Amino acid sequence: MRSAPVAALLLAALLTPLAGCARTGDEPAGPGPAALPAVEVVLTKSGGIAGLSDTVTVRPDGRWTKVDRSGVSRSGQLTAADLDRLRQLAADPRLAAEATATVPPTMCADAFSYRLLVGQTTTSYVDCPPQATPPAATHAVVDLLTRATG
Image (cartoon, rainbow, N blue to C red; front, side, top):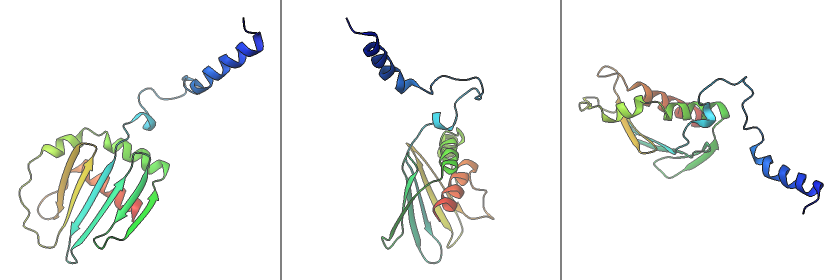
């Protein structure tokens, strides 16, 4: 039979990982940013007059790497706010709808093309303002990553 202090220590050790899991009632109901799916996101921007080709890869923990067409690499970490926003956008059901949308070929010369891979979902668009409006959710992710990794 274990003594009371040993049993108390054992119980504390078992319960410590659960600390902070209980709701206090102050939090909003439903999934918060931490509960949203954490997936890898890859953005490729190509085209333009100079023949740009940049790829940004964001890992689920917010670490990012940006590689340009010459192979020069930079890296960094998304802020907590940007990572929360990216997770919200990655969970946006509009991305799946945008991935299945049929888009006619562009007539723009020297436009930028964006290809976005969010988990298993791939979306893309060509930045050709007079021709079409970019898909909203995809464009929001592109804007976020362009700003955060610029």
